Length: 371
Image (cartoon, rainbow, N blue to C red; front, top):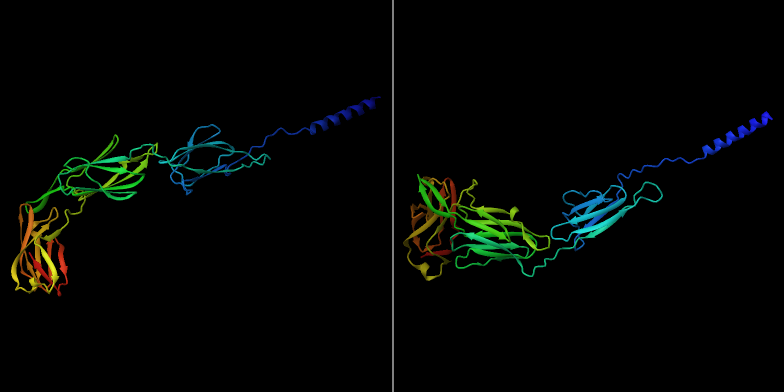
């Protein structure tokens, strides 16, 4: 009887051990989704071409919004595992895009992400305004030669005066986003030439060009400027209307008194009229007579007057011209034969080691008649 009880106890222990050994483990597998692409955005424009410089923000599972690099070109790739992704895409001139993408883990428990690829076609904004946008250009300069031209995405155009007789107010239509260049010439910012202690100097007249759109104004102070070229970008605002980015515009002035470039450039031109013709005209058969030619030279600022000389080639060789300052002008005179038949003719000026030749032509078969 004692042996029977022992046998029953042993059978019970064996059964209990078998039951315990058959239970499943409660451990949970941790998946590492690193390096796997969850979502790929292929970003295109309205023509299906790759879209550049797009601002992309996203958040995962209603978390905090995060930004990808400052601008995204063509494609954005997210590798943060499965979940619900929300996206916001923005670019100037285009309607903002917002959408959601769900990237799920593989149902077989293999720690793989079911990657999602989404094509995003951004839509250009359309300005609702019925009247065109204008950039106002105000010029402060007393000059009859003032001219304002612009190069826009639609081509080159000369702007007409939008004010009264003073013609210092202009309007440039902003047709669409793009790069714009505004050239203002004839500012006449250099005053007459004067001589101080034997050195050529010029007064710098105050000149201003002001650009304005809506309540944004940018003014350029341009003392001494003869011309200025302004480069700016026109983008679309939040409702798609052209908006000039005035605060980032750049300008290049001629001359630029702050630079090391001499101004104005060395130049010389003759004041008398010249007829260049063939040898058969009656005027060319007359006996040559002495004729007084007058030339005006432009001397760069800072030129020592003692270094300036002018000469004229008329026939046999170079002859020195007589020069002097009269009423803010540097004038030179020389006597040459008139008409000048079948002979070389040229005039030049030298200042501070720099030489400028005003005319140099092979004239063996030509006749020059001065008036």
